[in-house]
Image 1 (cartoon, each protein chain N blue to C red):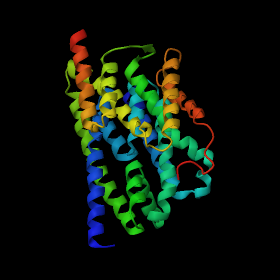
Image 2 (cartoon, chains in turn blue, brown):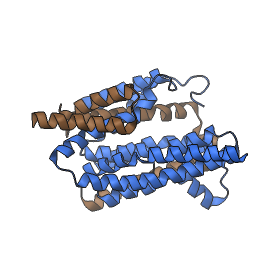
Image 3 (cartoon, rainbow over the protein chains, first blue to last red):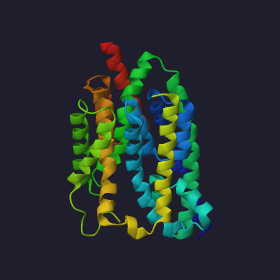
Image 4 (cartoon, one colour):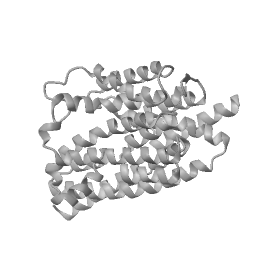
Length: 231
Length: 105
């Protein structure tokens, strides 16, 4: 790889990591509003380190849900990281258990996108590590700022935060539904089904369970395409 | 939920999510690359995130409630459709929620 390629890869990876990491402030504020302590919010960002699952966990808890529904929602959203790992293994080839265990911690949407988009294996590894490091540090620092900030809010600011939380989930969902996304019509159908199931079940199940139950909306996706869906 | 129970949820979910990541780097690809598995994993976030949007915007406990959160969500959807950056989307949603709270409070 040339020096220019290396510099461009580093710039893109670190830029993406810093930009997405700032979103951790929204997670920290959501966690604070859900009743988690600053330590609990920071442990989630440091150990779980996968945004959608973290948001789902505190979202279910914030809605008054119990532990099993919260954990189940986080794990269901975490399954896609397993598929990312399968795609990353031939690119990153971590040797030995320790490197494999360390690499696994940073296998998320953004680092996978960076590594897969890199022109060769060495640049893929560089993009994964640089993007992962920038995102990890920013995400955790922003989480702490968000959760401490949420604790200091007055009544009107709390109402503002209550409105930010659903908007944050919509912002996570939006890229999957937008025109040009892979199989956007299927994703939209499943999303509409998931929202409908959750609202219909809300009056009749314990809080939080309707989120987990909304997973049945995947049945609306229909059969896999012959090519096996997204590569 | 007590502090200890909340910690148990935080730790269990965190360890579980980590093990899902580790599994991807550890198990034979053929185990997880079944077309039906990839299909479900591909669409399950849409179902759950949409459910969370609905629950966070329209429910309180087991009741359906319409308040400033729905106004915030509508503003956020408009901002996202206009390709506004995340930070702007969240700030606009918060401002709309606060405005409704002040007007109706």
